[in-house]
Amino acid sequence: MTTLYIITRFLTFPGALLRGFLEQLICRIHKNPVEDNRYLRRDELCSHIEHEFMPKPWSSFAICFFPMLIQLILGFLVSITAAIDLLYLGVFSWPVGLIDLVCLWVGVSLSVNCFPSIEDAINLFGILYHSDTSIPLKILLTPGTLICYAGAYLERYCITFLTSVGITLVLALAV
Image (tube, rainbow, N blue to C red; front, top):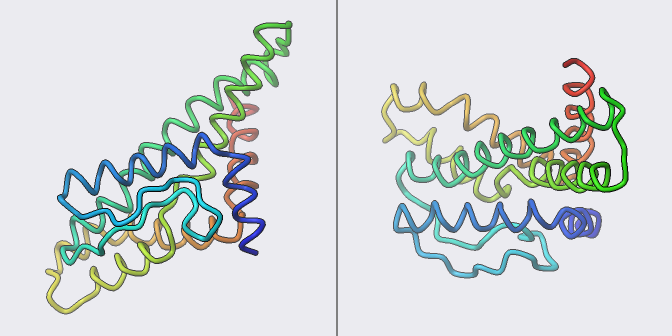
């Protein structure tokens, strides 16, 4: 399964590069040391960076959730505009159609690579439900944590590729 994961990451390299960059940016904002910042690698950390685990719930949540949110919004905005041109309007002239296909590929690649690594999601889940974390913070961060946790496993088994293409098509046809 790791081979399929790595092939998907390399085929959707714009999203993998942006995911690694956003994760590293959030780590720097929270002053979290980064151990390895190679974004495209041939292992299970492809499109992710290796960093220290944050002991604070809010910092760990920010490293997992905010890159996901930014990349998901950008991915759907780019892919839906291209999908509307191609599917709904039926516009496919030579330069515009090619640009729309490239935008569709970039948008889908951004949304495919949006979720955190499984290690980050497990760390976030463990920190959030530790006895020292306050109950209001647990209530506030639980929905985003569950999304990150479930999405990390979906991404690990390349299901996000299918869901990203499917959601883009459904939203483009619904408009």
